[in-house]
Amino acid sequence: MKIDIKSTNLELTPAISTYINEKIGSLERFINISEDVKTGETAPVEAFVEIARTTKHHKHGDVLRAEINMKVKGELLRSEAKDRDIRVALDTAKDIMERQLTEGKSKKQTQSKKGARLLKRLTSISPMAWFGKEK
Image (cartoon, rainbow, N blue to C red; front, side, top):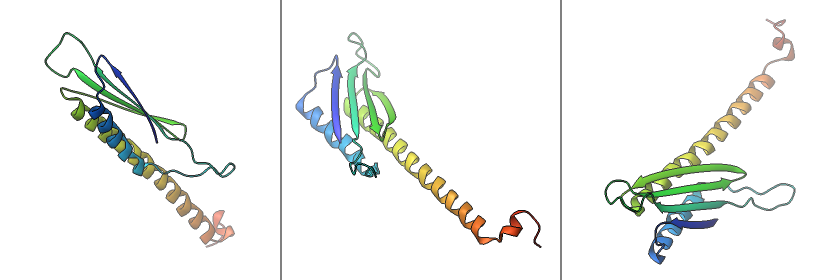
């Protein structure tokens, strides 16, 4: 997974950079990486992380923001969180992104199972019963 980090109005220290790489890198286990049938290559996964100080003159309240944009198989997923501490904001944004990844995965699995049930039901009855002529 490729992770791009951008900081706005905030100093990006090596400790914060390492923390971001660990947290966002852990999301890779939720991504179902499959190979393209024609080329045999895996689709690249990119994560764009932006950490920012929303204002320079406020000192109280939620003044730090973490935003994660992820490109997974051509689909863009986005999460954002604000907090006093940048690590808490990153954790919240990561949890939102994790939820989006697992919901998308379970939705696709549900749709494929539903299609398989329909196919099984249609093939298990005789063709004459499809038109209501067999009793």
